[in-house]
Length: 295
Image (cartoon, rainbow, N blue to C red; front, side):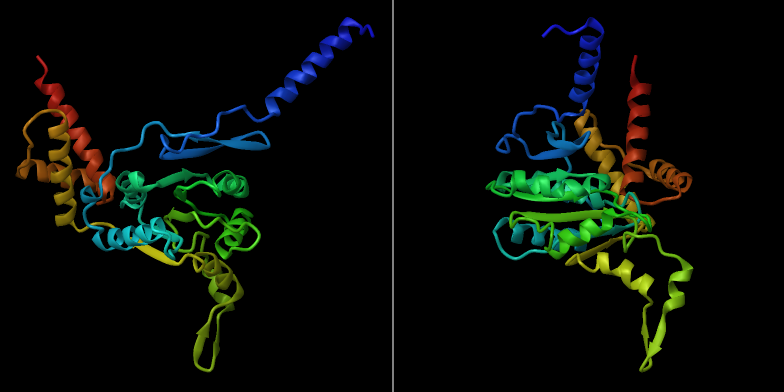
């Protein structure tokens, strides 16, 4: 059948447009060589993409969160050994080490079969696809949803509730879910939420709006809270961070009162005393120090 040139051209355009919608042809991940991956959405589907460079964070470098480290590490060890373990919600002030703690656990336990898959909240509806790909693997996977929060009308939280409940989107036995968030209940809280509260037999019972918001975070077996640091602990972290960076660059570790005052001033300008602020100051100071030493 001979087609007119204009018809052929139109068909080629249609095929080109359809090609862009089709998922990419990707090789299955070699989990023996890959310890972490991202879920990448592509049109109506997606795929797991290996993460090549992982921040080299060690558990002992995380100062001021000893209780959180111990609880989450033990929970992760239970999981790795096939014992009962809980999904975890790490919530609290930004920059206080929530994500760093999960990365540090991966760095320590990757050799024992721990793997991490990071997923964005907008892709939670693909969790069943991820489960299908990893459910029969011999490794143990933590699904990490970092910096998660939902708006009141966001349907994603219902999917997450379903997964945590083990109902429609039940996760395989080799999967746990760790979530980090600045919000304790993952959803925004309004003053009007309390209007539905009432007294029953001299006890306060939350209204439906509050109960709905609590019901999501309540499904995590572990709640770990993270707070802003005291100044003394903040300075301890700055000193240790500067020492580590100095060693990495082959120079003698530096610390004195002038550096401490500069670190405090930096935290005031950032309006936050936390591990992230400490790291940012250490990088800033060391970068300037090395630049000034250049001939």
